[in-house]
Length: 228
Ligand SMILES: [Zn+2]
Image (cartoon, rainbow, N blue to C red):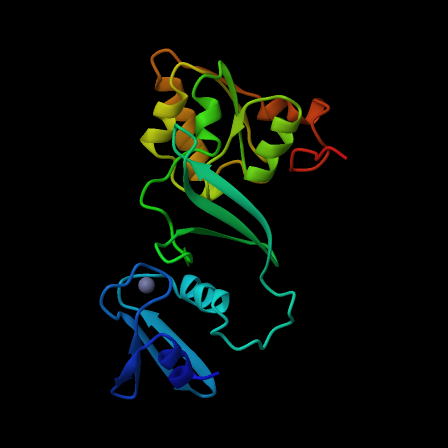
């Protein structure tokens, strides 16, 4: 596999020392992906702003990237569906192994666009809508663990590293919010922001139990224990 072959598969064309084609990582109307070979490597760059990793993942998903790594590399191990208030799908957070998280949402041709959806929502939004008490944890896996015990829980894609959007706070307005951050994740800007905004909520009630987590039976590890 080289730049010319990838370009051909994407119906691209030659341009200068390389090729241009439609970027597989976004809904590309005008070819905005540059490809070229350099020192035995394929270089890709989306001029519309897709991250290089997203472009490579999109190419891999179409079988258009050299399999230089072990077959198990970048195996999808979990897919988490994010929906709107009504429960209709917006996008997925995909967990890959070795550990990495990517967002994707359907294109109109039965494939995936590997980038952040323009509308970001809290995980399990349709469930937290009418719940009086909502746990906010770091990561979809912890949400699912709490759900399996009958609790209503949520998280934001990107965990504590992503920005906490005002719309997230709005989704939690009036709920009792119980924060259950990972001990090693505490201090992420997203969580600090959540803390401040939640306290400012007119009718919101916030409980921050991280400090006592050590004495609670909730896990000896950073993650919420899975049910086995
Ligand atoms: Zn792109």
